[in-house]
Amino acid sequence: MTTQPAGAAAGADFTTQPRISVRDAEDNLVPWFTGTATVAIKPGTGRAGATLGGTLSAPISDGVASFTDLSLNLAGDGNVLVVSVPGLTSGETAPFTVAQTATKLAYTGQPGGASAGLPFTTQPVISVLDAENNVALNYDGPVTVSIKEGTGRAGAVLSGTTTLDAVAGIATFTDLSLDLAGPGYVLVADSGTLTPAESTAFTVAQTPAKLAYALQPGGASAGLPFAVQPIVLVRDAENNLVPAYDGPVTISIKDGTGREGAAPSGTTTVNAVAGIATFTDLSLDLAGAGYVLVADSGTLAAAESAPFAVAQTPTKIAFAVQPGGATAGLAFATQPVVQVRDAEDNVVAAYTGAVTLSIKAGTGTPGAVLSGPTTVNAVGGVATFAGLSIDKPSPGYVLTAGSGAFLAESAAFAVGPGAYGLDDVAKALRWAGGFSAATPLDLFTHDVETSGASNGVLDALDASRIARKVAGLEPNP
Image (cartoon, rainbow, N blue to C red; front, side, top):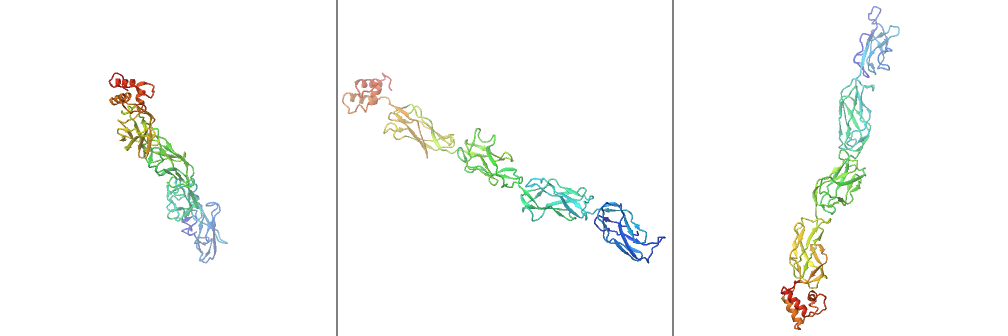
């Protein structure tokens, strides 16, 4: 062997090809010799299963044969080549090493189990190979994974550690994920110098991970459905809507927010449709500030609404204090109090409108008049009356309270007869003496009050007792 093989790398031509010469017994070149030299791997040397590639025969000219394209497919130490020429003693190369030269990348573990925003359940494994598809154990350079252009969802982003160094020719990824669901994703593995590799196409599924308010509750008034009802979305880990989700979503008041004792009404649990839970009739019974609603599914991360206030909307009026202790012509001993209330019977403190009282038609004595300030403005949602009186007695008066479109009626109450005065005495005496055209019916009440059981006649005794009462000699009713 006049030139030893060198620069051997698996699958690649030796950088220094072997050269042989034919010599005589004294080791002198035999320039006139012609023939053919054949080269082969010496049995038992190098890697088992290795194959010598290239042109294995070379012509001998001027006693010299040169090989030009020999290679070995497997890396390893201790490789020896044997050159034989018919009729001559064979020659051997010195032992030499076949190194590995990384030439390409390959997926030996395909990505799989991908859900949007979550690490793949099966992470890709990239092997660095030589030209003969053997793992290049000596390679420790970087390998980068990216989305192949035109595959998967437009705008998708590959997250995680997308570049790492190979260890013994293998790059094992651990935390890769894609943010957008969709089919047909292909990942490209590249090192910058080696032939890149592509994964098989795979799908990124959506996994619902959390809830989020797409529409906040608003326009809330105690006891009435919100003017703006909440809408809750089911999202994956990257905030994408999950149309496949159709499970239940429940709304409740967050502990410690709003008014203590408040309760939501309406359909508080609905099933999502295409990943969207739309509520339609929610309401809260107590007015107050700082309410927060929690949306929950039992399995996904819950969502909280922005804080909001529940206002009071007046829906009715009611007598909080009934009129009572009424005597004809005198102010009621108990003056009525009217409250403006919401749908849940809470006083609407913000209401300042006018409230008016009147005698309900068909009650009491015909022609009776309600006197005093019959219209007052509510203060803190309460209209407090004072100085009201009715001029004619009757056992069955009802007052009507009105404020805009709101109406309420008092309980029935009696107005008793008034005290007797000088006019009553004069009238009684004139009638008793026949000097008055008054009829017994006109003085019926006087007769009852002065004589006990009425006989329909006002007599002298009645007149006498009225006079005594006016004079203060008897209690005056």
